[in-house]
Amino acid sequence: MTFFFEKLIQFFVANLPTIDELFRFGIPFLLIATAALHFSGFLKKRYGWKTGYSRKSFHFIIFFLAATLHHFYGLRMVCLFGLMTSAVLLFAILRGDGNIFFEALAREKDEPHRTYFIIIPYMATLIGGVLSNVFFEDMAIAGYLVAGMADAIAEPVGTRFGKHRYRVPGWNAVGAYRSYEGSLSVFLVSFAVLIAFVSLKIMIPLSPPIIFSMFIISLICTLAEAVSPHGWDNLIMQLLPAALMSVFLNG
Image (cartoon, rainbow, N blue to C red; front, side, top):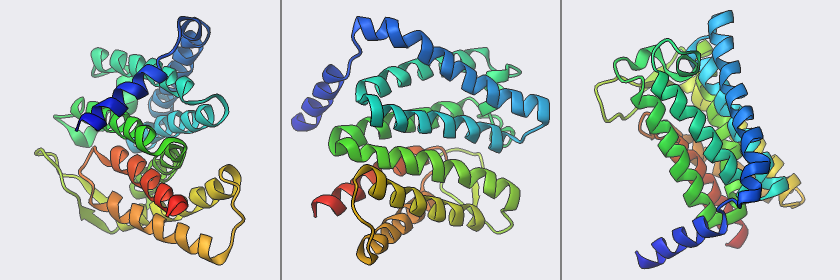
């Protein structure tokens, strides 16, 4: 346990933005996060997008930017971007029902716990992001990609094409369901992004054993997402791919 807390402290100390970074990048990151959430709310309000679409459009943008920042500028910039995004989410929660930011994220089907299901996925994302970086370092990018793309695409696919639903665990009275169609999309997109990650980030030539390994990792992630409690899949879908990729590379 002492080792765990030492690693956490070292992580936060090493990645605390400097005053210069805060002034140079803090406001631009805040504006980017604000624009992303406003855009998602605009799509819902102006074009009648279902919340499953608007919510995941924001999810996709944020995770994609986190992966890009991590790759090109390092983890400190990801932490600063996460801090600014947290500020935007706090504003949305405080404004509540009817606010364009809040409505972009709050599912109607989560009534009367709409705020809860903004806060819990945020906490899951934060915990998953921190732990994957603390223990698996650059493999955390694999987690960003799987959570940000595969998980983001699953809900819109399930909303639009999900005809075969199954109930998922939940720790409250809200009934939560996923679909086999959505889970299939999780698998396919996970497989695609992990192949891209291995080829472009790690620079390992593709071969049948590599492709088969990515197939297995994608399948495990899909099964884990299928049984993850409602609201907590962002933790599992970051941490598990990072851990499995670390085992794959170091095993």
